[in-house]
Length: 410
Image 1 (tube, rainbow, N blue to C red):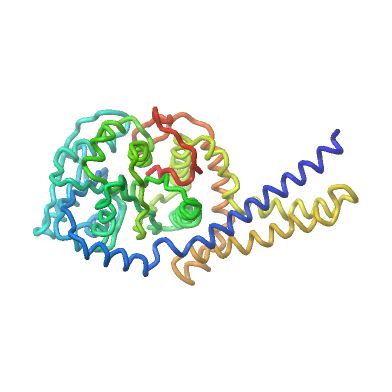
Image 2 (image 1 turned 30 degrees about the vertical axis):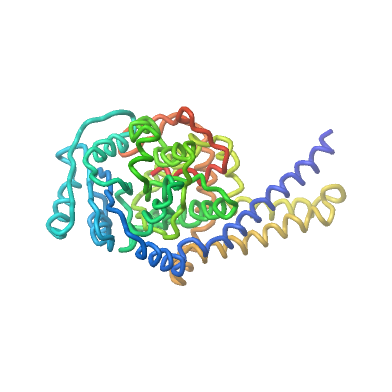
């Protein structure tokens, strides 16, 4: 019995190694299309050719993050002809207030309003902030974006243009990470640039449109009202994903905009990075448990090591699973996986200098992801902005697609 079981497990392990290698290769080759300069320029021209409708931008804030002023200022420098900027905090003592006051002084020509409102409606404090902001929004097009997002001047025009089609419910944006600080922010940026973003591209290439990212959610006010307003999300951990999901359940499409926005990774220590990324993974688990369970093949380096170990082990055993294919198949998967992983690293970065600087971090990044995935499989709560939020699949939300695309959990 054991004699038959060992070869079976060996071949099953080889199959998993090849699955991880093929995934890494697919992630690498799907990198260039989304966010390409040509696509963004074309989208900007098409948006400017239309008649842009006025927009209310909702920015929930909490605390004075590094580069908060610089990130928010990019929203003040939009080329869109008419937009309202609403910045919300829940406390009159929030240090983000001073940043908003600076913006109001620096951009007096902009329609900038600060909303200080402590009312809470559910367990998700960000959604409570959004409910308070929405009450002050004057326009029928709404754009929601997290506080740590930086955008180009044509951003508003591009993300609102698809809403001219009545079949579009939500427009969202993928993003790339910038590390702010030292070693651990660099590791955190790799989480986004070399795991999360490529996974979204793979899913998008495969035809999935089950997206919803806190970096950008653009929609019509009528769509928001149709799904029950922000109040429908007040107890949801993955509010960004659920908003887009509710719109899809009402027959509206989710559109992934062609441009990338920038986000900051600022976690200065291993502990803070671990907490953020396990929260992120638990958020994915909350909206798609089955998809979360399949994520283990998206961490290439542990499987590359497994392929090498399998080849060495098979070569040391005469006959049975020590046959030639049992040796060269896992070895080939390891070689192919190494090439694919290096290519993915090259296409995810910010130039030659960053490629060589961060190349030694790739094995650490993949191994850490595998450990975080194991840790995220357990636990019933996450901590977000100091608030303890339960991990639970929101009522009525079904998730049938790969979980990695669902939500950034920001």
